[in-house]
Image (cartoon, rainbow, N blue to C red):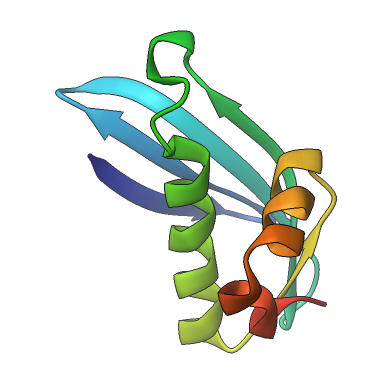
Length: 93
């Protein structure tokens, strides 16, 4: 599974691909220099139950740590994952 992050202007996303096929995407908005807002997570039906959403979130958390920024999870999936996984809460806004 390959996960890449791209940003353009004030929007960004992490995309998971397997064998050139999109497995899932997590989108976010850049809210200033110190914060991003995760607003949507989508996993393709054939990849359900394989942890794609979690992989996407952890990739964005890794980026947030590198950039020393915080994350505000408005997406219900991301919000639930932050509640469930204590190891990523250091980047919570």
